[in-house]
Amino acid sequence: MFKKRPSKSELRDQLDAEVHQFLKQGGKIEQVEMGESGLVDGRYNLHKTGYNGSPPAAQERTPVHSLLATIDSRRKSKSTHTPNRQRTRAPRKKVIYDDFGDPIRTIWIED
Image 1 (spheres, rainbow, N blue to C red):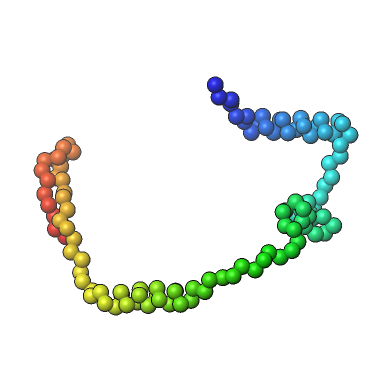
Image 2 (tube, rainbow, N blue to C red; image 1 turned 90 degrees about the vertical axis):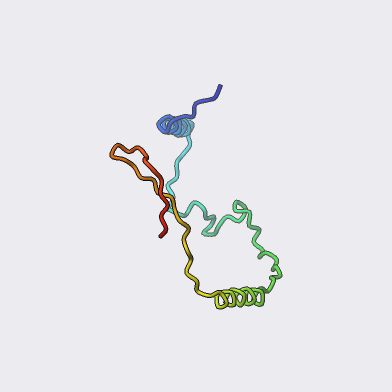
């Protein structure tokens, strides 16, 4: 029905076999410095990255300073107009258990 995914050791063995086959056919492995493989003649290969070399067209931005100022002023006015009231908690239910963990009764507690 479904195909079993190969384990890491199976993938490692398969990769080793492919490398040995490549070397048997006359291929060579070239050692490169870290980070050098993405460079062509000391520069990034522009064809691989999809970058065409010209800067993107400048997009017109929407100014939002006035909008942000309006939002901030609303936020400040809301916080100054609301009085500091103590929030009253609703009573909560508490279950009383006996020594064996069986519930005996329920009581309401006001904090």
